[in-house]
Length: 220
Image: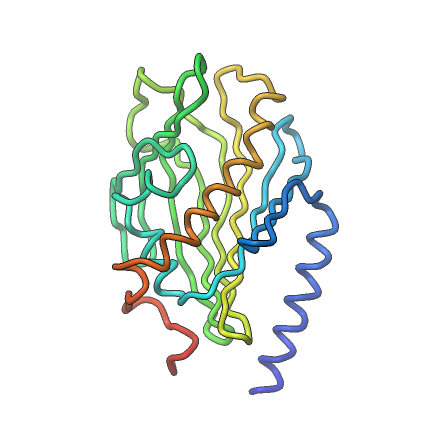
């Protein structure tokens, strides 16, 4: 069993290196251990981003922050509002988000289906995010984002730290020029991850224990 788990780790690392080959490093902050990559996306003028952060924290602290919708505007870059529409289960929820856009561009809103899973062998937490267009009516005050997919992933490391991956591709809609939208795909993950790093060192997150999350220091 131990050997099988180690082989899974090696394969995962090799696959991640293959995936990174498609990405271009756009920003690196060594003091905060943050890297931001971007790449061209198929059938879209909008670039996809991938932010990476190494942080000394627990899986529960990270998930507790993600699930604290009231705190969203404090750390998610340009988040104006974040509200849960429906808590389907401990692992799945629908939430509504309003994102600020630079003047004179109209702010955006979106409805996102979030599904959390955790690998039973490695402990890796994956939170898949897909936009939903069949719930919650559009608001005339905002332009609705109808094309977005992404994920959060928290990978426990052997040294007790966690590798955080935040990857998203979205089309902001509403006729924003691609050059303007693409100018924001580096800022969004960078400042979000920088703020996340600070938030998970504070209460109530630093001492969080969640029944639906197995921290790597705990036995299943």
